[in-house]
Amino acid sequence: MLPSRRAVAAASIASIASIATKKFDETLKKDFLVSMDDVIKNPFGALANDVETRLGQSYGFRPARFFVARPLSIVKRRRERRADARTTTATTASTRARIARTLARARSATLATRDARGVVASAPPDEGRARRMSTARFYDDVRDATTRAMRYSVDGTWRTSASGSTCEALNPSKANAPANRFQACTTSEVDEVFAKAREAQRTWQRTPLHARAALLHRAATLMRENAGEMAEALVLEVAKGAKDARVEVERSADLIDYTAEEGVRLLGEGKLLMSDSFPGNDRTKLCMASKVPVGIILCIPPFNYPVNLCVSKIAPALIAGNTVVVKPPTQGCTATLHMIQCFLKAGFPAGTVQAVTGRGGEIGDYLTTHPEVNAISFTGGETGIRVAQKAGMVALQTELGGKDACIVLPDADLDLAAKSIVKGGFSYSGQRCTAVKLVAVFEEVADELLSKVNAQIAKMTVGQPEDDATITAVVSKSSADFIQSLVVDAESKGARLCQEWRREDNLIWPLLIDNVTHDMKICWEEPFGPVLPVVRVKSDAEALELVNKSRFGLQGCVFTKDIDRAIQMADAMETGTVQINGPPARGPDHFPFQGVKDSGIGSQGITNSINVMTKVKSTVINLSKPSYTVA
Ligand code: NAP
Ligand code: G3H
Image 1 (cartoon, helix red, strand yellow):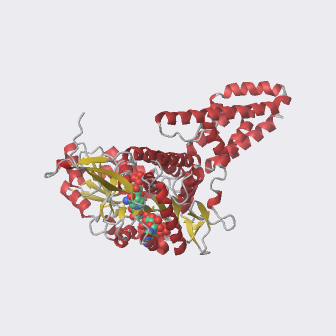
Image 2 (cartoon, rainbow, N blue to C red):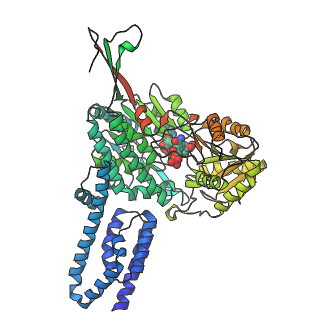
């Protein structure tokens, strides 16, 4: 008996582990927990350890931890159980109950920690558990049951467009095979969405601030609980590595929680001004200045962070009493719609959070010039410049492209600089606005720096996002073609490719390009891919000229041990942010984040976004007699 049961158990664990490491699905996790009963029947702690390790590596989920921590006691108990085969059923039931108890304790401990920090207080542990069990099909109604196309969100429901047309997101990692379809919304559907947003905004702005914050916390909790499919959609449609996809969802939930906390403080206070501080006045006028919502905010995120760069817009908008209309990017649309579902399921009133879908090239102008829009928060590329040119009298927050330079001075810690260049230049295959897109290194340390960078590039994995390869396919064929054209141009003008040029469909192998000069396009253009140009410089002034001649001005970084020189360089760099001894990055998400020149208008970061999405209203009390309060 034993050998065959052992074989069956081993095979089933191996198969569960292999499937589970590839899938994020919550249902699968649940199934996995049930299957752990079978694991407990087998005495091979090592095998279970392997399962745990692989699950932990894949997405930090460690259902078997309590079990693996005590394999010997379980083995002992298993031997006792074997003595009486007839008790097996009852034992399995008690094991199930023990698993449930242990998990419930772990969950309640997590929630209690959050409560103590005041971060999340919405779901009591039992309710949270019940909801988790019942949300296996959490995202079901986002998809049309018949056509399987994703639907758009209007007035608290999901609807299929009357247009009868859809548009398509492709899978960048699978030679651009079809991935998902979305509704191509009509202009009258857009009108309806804006009408509902206006109606809802009148009530929403009068909803108590603490209640708005509680709903945001609830949405964040739901995002964490239903992160699996959302992250999977990022892997499928934008080729984001599985771990990074999960991090994007978790980071977004944290951003929502932080925004709710910041909002209750920032918006819970106003200003009282007294007239007698200005010459010619006594104190007969008292001015109450408070922050009020702008109205309806149109939120347009880019493909590379379709969840995070959407919540960074909608959470500040909502806490401030605005309603939002989201236009998801075509690539990445599914994850954005999943995120919207978390807000709907959290209980946001109908009309407060809606999403219209369709290609930007088709419905974009109609949306951005719609008379009901009061503010536009846009993140993307060149399109943003056109949006700004067309938008009328509305508040604008645009975060656009970048050409972030990394200046390496002769006294820099070259190991640190090399590590930062690799992380900054190649994470998410260079598809970050804040990616290092140009290295300006002093001639005397250039060879040493480049050999360190090249050594790290040699270790990078290139392949599938499901496997967490460092370099994955870029978002589209046209993007890959553009990157290739920049490399061809540079090579034809004398640049030296440090690695062999290699491309398969959208997948481009990481490439460092040395001896880049000002006449090459790659010196100025944003490749948005895993190719990184290097310009050798002789002076601070030459490095600064490179940075400041760019039409972009998002971030830049400087590596040196001389803090005075670093500050001098930072002062002179015409960029929204300068990082000293670290790679460019937007986060932590509460830091102010802004670009100058073609990199954007306004500032992001949680506090700044709340400010952009409010305006000041003054109410002045005119008194017949001066009022001087004394204490
Ligand atoms: P994109 O092509 O400019 O698209 C951004 C968004 O605009 C998408 O949702 C797109 O929808 C939509 N759109 C397209 N045409 C439109 C129109 N006429 N009116 C209104 N919206 C329209 O940018 P991307 O390719 O997604 O992202 C890459 C670029 O974004 C890079 O340049 C990168 O540097 C920049 N970026 C900047 C930041 C930052 O914070 N500074 C952050 C991330 C990315 P469709 O997908 O349907 O076309
Ligand atoms: O792609 C643009 C994002 O704003 C960059 O964010 O620096 O966190 O990757 P990140």
